[in-house]
Structures are given as C-alpha cells and as structure tokens.
Image (cartoon, rainbow, N blue to C red; front, side):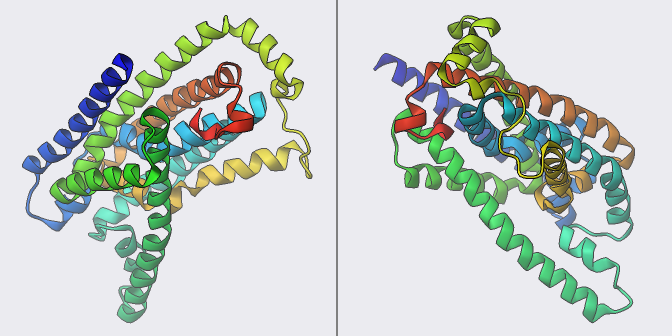
Length: 315
C-alpha cells in the first residue's frame, strides 16, 4: 500500500509539472497566428529535437517496442534501427528546405504549405489545402487516439484504472496546455517528457538487467524459455531479411507525412540548425530504443505470465 501511495504521488507530481510547464508557456506567447502555430519560428534546436523525439516515440516505444520485444525477443531490434535510419534520411533530405520554404511563403501549417505551390491557381491551391487538412484531421485523430490508449494502458497497469478514465485524464491535460500555449506548450512539455523518458528508461533497464543477473544470465534465461527469443533474424520472412529491413526504413521515411513532427522543423529558429536538431534527436532516440529493447527482453524473464494470461504491451 505504501508503494502505491508513493507511485501515485510521483505520478501526480509529474502530471502537474507537465501541466505547469504548458500553462507557463502561455505567458511567453504573442497574439499572432504564427506564434500560436509555430512559436514565432524561434524554437531552440535542442527543444526541437527533444520534442520531436518525444512525440515520435511515446506510445510506440513504451508500449509497442517493449511489447513486441517481449513477444519475439532479439529479432525485434531491426524495427527501431531501420526506422531510425529512415527518419534520419527524411530529416536530412526534407526538413531544412521545409523550414526555408515555409518561411518564404508564410506558411504556418503543413496544409497551407502544400497549397502554396498553386498560388497562381487559387482555387486549386485552396482545394489542396482543404483536402490535406481533412486527411491530417482523420489520420492524426487516429494517431492521437492510439497515444491516449497507450497512456491508459500504463495507468491500468500501475493503478488498475479502467481505460476510459485514463483516456479522459490524458485528453483533458493535453487540451488544457495546448489551448493555453499553442505549439510552444506542446514543444516545451514534450521536451520535459523527453528528459523523463530517457532517465526512466535507463533506470528501469539497469534495475531489470541486474534483477536478471546481467547480460549473460539474461541470454541463458531467454534461451531456456524459448530458443527463438535469442535469434537475431526474424523467422518466417516470406521475402527474406532485406525487404523486411527496407520496409521499416521506409516506415521511418514516413516522418515527412507526420504533421506533428513537420511543424517542429518549421518552428526551429534557423534552417541552419536543422542538422544539429536531427543529430540530437537521432542520438537520444537510439538511446531510448536500446533501453526499451532491453526492458522488453528482461520483462520476458521477470514477467513470464504476460505471454499467456496478460497483455505483453503492459510489460
């Protein structure tokens, strides 16, 4: 009972810290559309990188990567590795030019940016803007729902709360700070969350690895549970390993189709700082992926019943 109380206190403290940071960001806002949507294009590259990493990994990492690694073992490593390569290429090829052209055309959103190419044909440009906005609403609405489900799964695992309550709490907090501070609030709170993600993943990985007896014992115990867990190459790939790996590289390239990441590149203080932000994001993201991968492996040893009578995504 005492542990639960301390967990609750810690959880509430972090929620309050995120909310306070988001609301404080509202004190820095200017009453312009560009400031609300792009923080006046004046975001520090470190904040750009950390917020892009947090918003890109979030539920995918804590629920998806850990859960999938729990199920399949070492062969899951290729997904975050290939994904990171594709993401890096996307930042390298697209994001600097996006920052430059979006400012030149006074485009404050991805939809307005896509419609700008057709200014000489105003009706066509307007149609592109509207259609792209509807596509973004539809798909990012689904994406946001997945993140809220991921958060509610975490609350269910820790406190036993039902999923609906977790979704409602998460939605209320996000809406509160986004409406108060716009994209600046989102970037600032994401950056705080990124630091928490890095720290918590490392702490959890080290503790769980020690509980398993170290790397050598972890390998032995996984092999005893199921020898396929220590295979580096996924089994039963119909077209072989290379197309499988390439598919996940292409998935990483999908960053160019994720408006919540694109706007962070559009909001950075200078196009010349895109390379720095890209490198920071890559290094921090790979650290997170490595520790999440390790947590998934150790969880298979420490929480064996999840595979048969639970949800591996709760690992």
